[in-house]
Image (cartoon, rainbow, N blue to C red; front, side):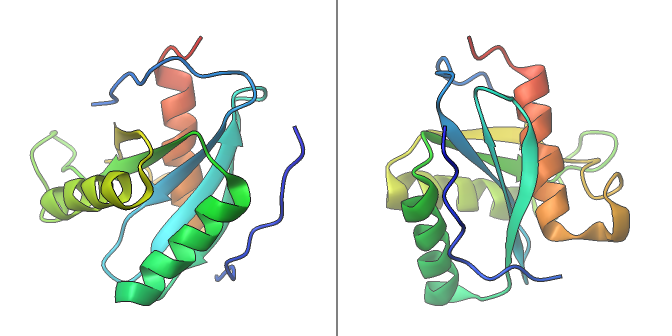
Length: 146
């Protein structure tokens, strides 16, 4: 698989999806009210890596997400859903779910959700793109995609 360059500027309970083809590209998202972190991975390596941080809001945010989707041509998307450490809904839980539904509706791609309660805690410096990579890696590691 040949990776395509990103077009966006870079700034500083898991649901089982349909089977993952070895060549499929997957984009992962760490939703935030001010920024959205994005990561990329594929079915060959099953490794996620940070890709971009989108610090824009509204239509510009959606345009930048669309640019990444056009450039990388993912087969599916993964969104981290915020929860408290005990699993209870977080103040961002509903907004993460809404973001996941909007991604599915706008881009007509399957969207998996991952419990992201520890993604920010394990990233160095709390970068949003690194949190997205943790979320996407968790999806690769936890679910069966063969």
